Length: 386
Image (cartoon, rainbow, N blue to C red):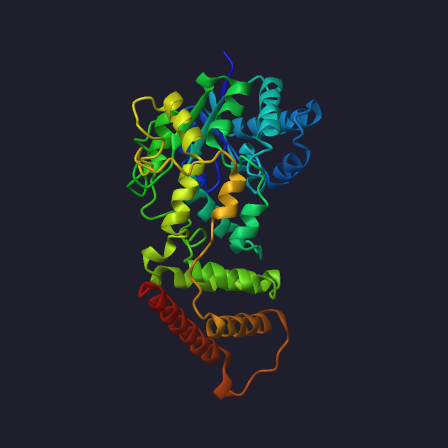
């Protein structure tokens, strides 16, 4: 019998980092259950992104990588491995392209699994599109983009983030019975480890001897930013080097726990309704196929949503979303942030003479840090009062 290969393909911003960290932590315990964890190398990811054209050359490269990974994983194991797990959110395609390249990636994965003599299963997590777009846009701003939310949406191909189409793409390659679709939303995963337990349940992993994290995994790395922080970062990205952007990210991650949760709501109520209506039909079709006992794909998307404004084209959504509808005076905050980042950059990457004791760098840093926190608090209070 062929060994099983579970391919966790994401999508992005659905707990992938937590799942992968959890699997790595429990690598030895999983091996005792006959499950091998395959860590997909960064260089292999780059090659696959570049050459995933659905042709046999790309598939053979991936198959060779899989065989090498399995060989390395099997050597130190005393027990026989009958199942392997491969996790990377890039397997579902490029989110910048709205996952329109998913058919190429799915075909490559299918051919590669056959070359490797493995029986492939796909596990896919999806989240409400309005949450997904908000979270993913925030991530690319953290990574350095200077695009506004409108520019980001205008750059997407038509029918982007259509979960029905994405699911059917992998069903076409692997068969519906070998594709698991799960919903990622706060109403279904209320506890901090629920996503991990859900993942284990689908893969028939015994959780008895596994170590679950006491707190959120990589919470600082993936900390959510409020709308003002995202806008400040986006505007500063054009002026900062990569090193300075990283420093700013670290500062903002430290500030994140002080921001009230209601500031994380990215879209206005009207914009949220537009997004829900844009995907209403396709989401309902996917719900009927995969969750026939439910009335809507996501618990928050009830059937009372106004359907009169529903459109099938993503361009309609793009042309109607107004963005923030929130324009606080950010000049002071921007200036303070820029001063702080520039100061840290000079101290870290340039040779500077030792300043006088009254201008000790740590004293200056502390003073600027306090000022920027006060500035953020002022901006956020202004937002909350509106």
